[in-house]
Length: 401
Image (cartoon, rainbow, N blue to C red; front, side, top):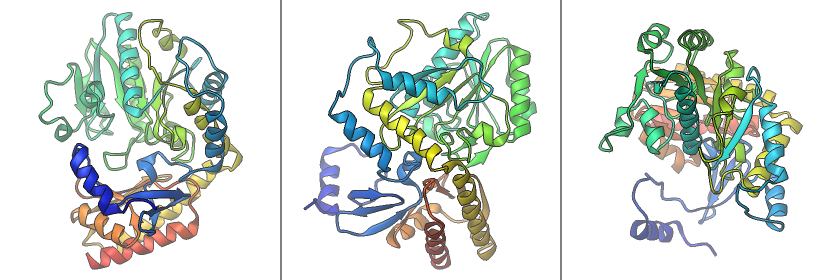
């Protein structure tokens, strides 16, 4: 028998750091869009893994690929080669469009993918007049490591850990004039999430990213996309920039849904930028290991075989329609409903935390960000009935809160 949620909570309180606001649930099992706690209670999960479980919990192809790999080899360092890493790079780069001669690098997380992307930009800038400064978006989020948090345009997340890395300027989303003004002769790159995740599901417009591409080209700078949360099919295409009809970047990076639940991050850079990574410039002990690569290949195989890209679009439209109906039903409590594909948000006029807690008590798992925003990142495998169930629970809670 598993330990009770309270027993596990007591162990956490005694032996782990307190940097997470953890719900008092000991989750012991997951399947599809549902999880179960130690007491046997079932929950509908509309935020599985905060975007990690894009195929739902325990997707069969991923589970089987990991089981098979476990019996063969677990780890070998990157001074050697293995088939699954080469094939993953081939399959993943083939999903990009508009990136010239793309090359891949694999690591373990979104933050690590941010770090190598910032580093490769500065390596490229060193060869192009010594450029080194970055412009990023306010309300963006790029990770918790020092380079990543320096790139994150949220002062509240940077509080008390200054000084940050130098060379970062932040501009508002979808303001091309502000972006142009922020450039100088030392700017090496503009960094954007095509759809901001932690920032509250804010989407760049096609016109803004077109302007960003033109501004970067004018100033001899790179265009970088962080697709850690919005990539790997969530918006209805493999990458959000494709859904938006936006220009291709010079560098993009991803993580979360790439491994279907297993840790992996990656960067894809156009050939002339990728050439900046030579032996000794960067590395990752566990990056792109056998388990991670077979899991990621199984994710790609599942998305393609089960036609999950069009499913993400139709399911996302159903979810957004339901959220807009809640906005109309509760105009004093709901300020806005928005989203792209299966990235959606409900912006409230009341604190999100109480709504999240009450939904959890009612069997629905979501989360809040930016104090008043409810965030939804359902699996691409979610059914219409499950979407409707989640909306019904949320509607009941909003009526009572």
